[in-house]
Image (tube, rainbow, N blue to C red; front, side):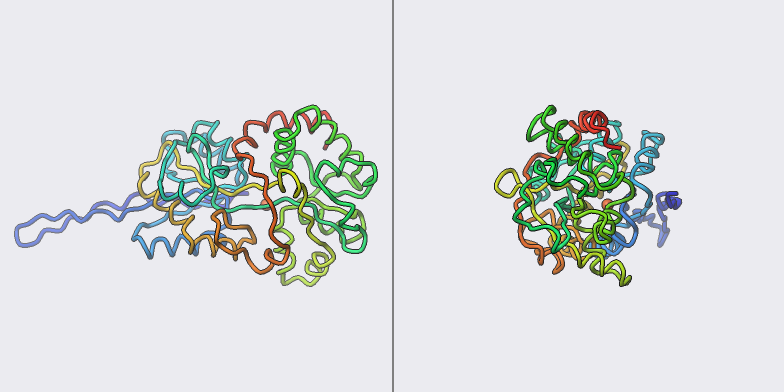
Amino acid sequence: MSKTYALPSLMAAVITISAGLIQHAHAAEEVNLYSARKEALIKPLLDAFTQDTGIKVNLLTGKADALLKRLSHEGENSPADVLLTTDAGRLFRAKQAGVTQPFSSVEIDKVVPEQYRDPEEHWVGLSLRARPILYVKGKVDPKQLSSYEDLSDPKWKQRICIRSSSNIYNQSLVASLIAANGEAKAEAWAKGLVANLAKPPKGGDRDQIKAAAAGVCDIAIANTYYLAGMLNSKDAGQVAAAEKMAVFWPNQSGRGAHVNISGAAIMKSAKNKAAAVKLIEYLVSPKSQAWYAETNGEYPVVSNISPSRTLAAWGAFKADNLNLSKLGTLNATAVRVMDRANWR
Ligand SMILES: [Fe+2]
């Protein structure tokens, strides 16, 4: 269930009368934010933003797909100014649903690489997540690993764990393979991958890591922040499982490892667009980017900001520089490819 809070309406303008003069004290500037990121992952940044700018942020958090449904339902009457959500595929869906509008900012364009921005300026990336190959130390010689493509080779039969095709992270990964190799090759690849699965593709990314650590498979595909979260967990079992795993950066001699973003869009219904742009600019500032990277276990979207110590230990890598809007435009094709490959 999504958590919901009532959004306070704009504070009524306060009118003070003194010595025969009428003064209109303007209501404080504010911005209404719908966030698929959990409150703990965003609230401290919003508080700092308010502190620095005087702009109040009204936060409503919920699950990504529920928030998008809500935005579509509210339409022009939506109080939302900004949507924060994960995966370029979802940002694309919001744009396609017609609830977003273009916005431009010289400051954002200066610091956020072009491949992490919508070409029509409807959304912009705020943090970067990578989806590399994780392997069980001692069970896989990293010399045997090379690319995502290679995971369809029969040498990996019954050795791979990956979650279901209904998950947008996998849809985006397959979309990146379609962009690189074309639909036919991507489908042959997906069939080969499915034939190599050690178990039905159930559970989330963490479950794939746990299954690998428990000996069910030798390779897991997962976003790195899950591994980082497990390594820094208070749960000794999660730490122990994560410590059995190593990160392999695939496709380093080619296009690079698959990456995705969390990002922000401005709503078509926005009544506080200027404040909304200021908020997004704030979220790509060095201060926010450093906090984001440290707290979320994601990579900064802006260069020259160091990732957290946990992430730095996995080394630098080459990221696929495909414009992430492609993950959206190729999403439907990716879903069909996975379906034909019987990827459950
Ligand atoms: Fe996630």
